[in-house]
Image (cartoon, rainbow, N blue to C red; front, side, top):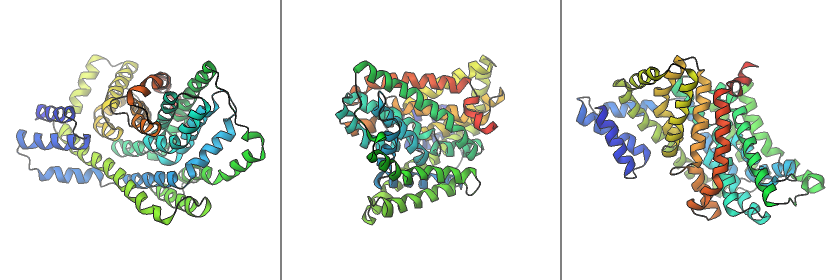
Length: 423
């Protein structure tokens, strides 16, 4: 049964079947050909996989991100970032990264962050003298923080699967996300310095800059309200997601007035499609995972890994290698659902904190968003800049190396993830 499961899964994956269908198809084949279990069990298992109150945060955060992109909030975040750091060497590239970090504190999605900030910053960076390859690579890499800085859709999924506190996951994501942003800013600075790119932004010292900063306060208040409400105990992460939707609607329709009521049907449709993809993956991956669990595959893999070594640091290295490879081929949601039941028991058995494990997993899969062949942020950036995937790869390599340095520090310096939990 196990052999049928994996053979049918990899066959479907190789011929280009979408990952959610691969998972469901292989589970059905395994049940039909390898057991006497009725297929109705699969339907019940899929429904159970998405029948969770915390998962209601996902459609609301997706909707909030789409509202912000349409309502002018992302443009104001760029204005705020430009006013803060626009004058330093490499400032425009750093603005892309800094604005993405702020947008990440609202959207919870890496591709959404790349799309929202990249649509504003790629044309500006080209005009400023940055090569189109580097401009596209910068917004793609900056988008990776979208799923690390809270709120984060992958954190919600991991929290549900690992029975971990979603609020604690959110709190643990701040420092790793900031570290990722800082190492990417170093790359931006070195590129600008080497290529002699000068900044022409003067907004931080004149009335225009002050006005833009004041005008961006409505956008800046959004993550403050969302995260402040969660950590003050005013509302849960799920409720915070719905608050984000209503706040985004209010600001987009009545404050910035860049969104019309006629835009709502498209926003709702796009959000429904985005949510459906995630929830379908969750459902079929839960079905796939149920078969793995029934065959005791996670326990067998745990025994194999622990037979190799009980050294926590070597196991963390293996953990990273598995996740980096998985991130090249799997959507983050699918990878988390598939690998959490397998890898979590191994690392908790050697004393690694479950929250820390979740952060390592999410950072690894964030790097996977800019590695081919499935890197979603790469494709979004290519679409925005009008270049081919092969062209962007040269520009993305320095960012991947920088993010791997950050990943190494996050993995082996536990305090980076858990510092805010211990204060």
